[in-house]
Image (cartoon, rainbow, N blue to C red):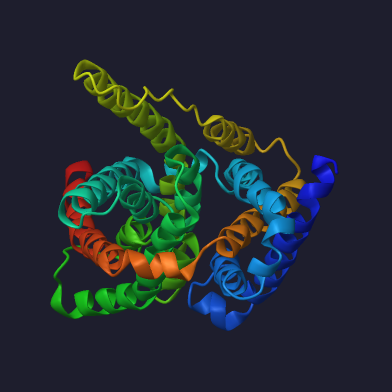
Length: 355
């Protein structure tokens, strides 16, 4: 049987899951609670993956793997059509600095606490860090190829984004209302709070839902700030790839020097799709492409990412998630607290320095 025929059953299963997830994700109640089609897709995938799918896993395995890997990269590349270089100008140098500081500090904190304090493996810690620091599930999925993580590790990381990102939808409007009365954060208007929300909430859908609960202006600024944060995914992946290669090379050299022969130097994994992502952003910035084409391409991108999420869910075993225990959620809770408290401090300091 040719490879194209072997991947077909899994591709069909992923496509059906994606279509259902997109349909459900368009429902008003789910949108109001920041539940995007991607989140719905992985939930449906997990439900089927632990009930029906195991009986057909042998037939669908290759197509599911293709969806998780190749289609995921294509989805990340097309994600660039949602962004333009003009987005950076909208939030100014303050927004860019805030995003960069929060991204680096959140990822570093996740790696340190995850591996040193909670005893989690490095892949899980980094995936949780990427999801919390950048753009939620999309960042977790984009980081997974570099770490060669297991499906269970990816799902555990995404679960922290879903749980605490959903909580953020209700917490941030409450923080805004409390601040109106208590003035805990000085000189906070709809614009500055939008930058705060966009630089600290996990998913784009969650950012929009939280910002919209305050005002349309807050939502607009929050989403633009969030999109600048998403744009930092490419340099993050490139930097992480270099760091992983260097770190593994040192470990291999140490093993060779001690006579154990442990490990082999890991080659630098160049995330070419990250460069393609940046190229798409640049092309989109010059508005060469017709709006109708861009709109259709964004719809296709949502479909491809939903297929990847559904495929991930199908290969996720709840027993492995239960085995991971509460430590990943505790790490996610600490990062959530850091994003709220530390994020507020960084926003205040940077805004004060810039202005």
